Every structure is written in structure tokens, then in C-alpha cells.
Image (cartoon, rainbow, N blue to C red; front, side, top):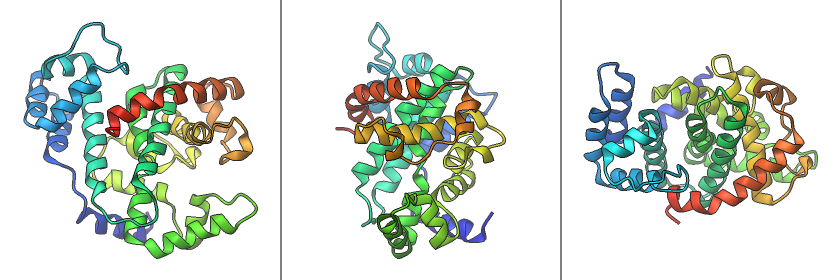
Length: 285
């Protein structure tokens, strides 16, 4: 690990901390001795997270036929891992909301992240043998390293963004970051996930989303987030043209066992159909 990355992440950790509700839920999910009731009790101690959990449980995202009106029932039908994922997503979004940042609109940042999360979940369902909800969370958090760089190294980040704007050959943001900083936001995000002791799937998907071939523990899931990142941009730009987005590693398609163009078109259109409801749920719009 580049020592500069570790120092950067340690610096931001003094400003951004994960709230107690996530830490407690994470401990319970990881413990073989905890029960669903223990997790429900931990959720119930946080009124704002309780409201969000019930909103998600009753949304078209899950499509349950009956109303879910209690925390234990919500935990039961959604599952403990997804409750943890939801707590994590909420915790990180709220934790970074207060960090000063003049380089990117937080609304645009989280909207792109949500597009990526939706695309990742759709691809995971088609690829099978993947936890679609965990991959959704990985997609939602894939660019978290950008916020660290924007906050800690704003002038260098601006320099990297300017390189992208000035380049006529299609230089990507992560390539420009490597030129300017010696590392990129994916590496920073992966290190943040490691230091926060997040599940290894999230750490690797975040850290390898631009270079899925480097993933060793969760290569299929990292490949999904890599592809989803490009499809998210397509959905945002309302295009299916490959040249409008960063190149997708052909080996990523091979890793998930899907073919390209038909999957791209159907996924982009479905993400566009889902984004309004997802924004209401996760961005409070």
C-alpha cells in the first residue's frame, strides 16, 4: 500500500466517523451468537434509521405484498446482511455530507453512485451466484475515495480534473489522478474500507472498480461494479455509445458470464426506469 494513501485516509478518519448504529449492527451480523432480534433491537435504538428501514422495506424495491410495520418484521424480510448494508450506506452518506468540498456537487455525486448501484444490482441478478444487495452497496460506495481526495487534496484534485478536461485522447479521471497523485480514488476508497473494517467484498469492489483484474477474493463482484460504473454514465447521459464512457474491460464480461450489447441496453433502460424511486428512498428526493 502506498504510504501516502494510508496517511490520506487516516487524516480523513479524524473528520468522518461511522455512527454507533452501524458499528453495533455490523458487530451483530458478524457474530455467530447474535440473533435477528438482537439486530432489530439495535436498529430500534436509532429512530431516523428505523424510519429509513421501514421506508425501504415497504418500497417497490422489495415488492412485498403486505405492509411491513415493525422493525423485527423488516429485518426478517430484508435480511440481516442487507440491513447492515443499508445502515452502512446511510452512515457514510451522512458522515461525508458535512465535509467541505468545492469540486463536486454532492447531489450529483450520490446520483451517479445510485445509478451505479442500481446497475450493479441488475447485473448481479443476471450473473447469479452473487449477493445482489451487497453489490448494490458496493456500487453505491464505489467512488467514496473521490470525496477523501476532494477534501484532503483539493488543489491536486482540481489539477487532475483539469487534465481530463484538457485531454483530447479520452484520459479518465482515475488515470489523471495517478499522473498527478501517484494513486487514484479507487485505491483510496479501498484503503478507507479496509481501515473501517468493512466486509471484504466491499473493500475489493471499491478498490478494484477501475481495475477488476486485480480482484482476488471477489473477482465476479468487482467486475460487476466495474461494468456498472460505465453503464451508470450511459444511463445519466442517455446514450448507448461505448465511446461516450470509460472503456469496459472485456475480461469483466467474461468474469460475470454475460454478453455485452443486449445486456447493456436492457440494464441502462431499467436503471433509468428505477432511478426516480431510488432517489426518493436513498437521497430523500
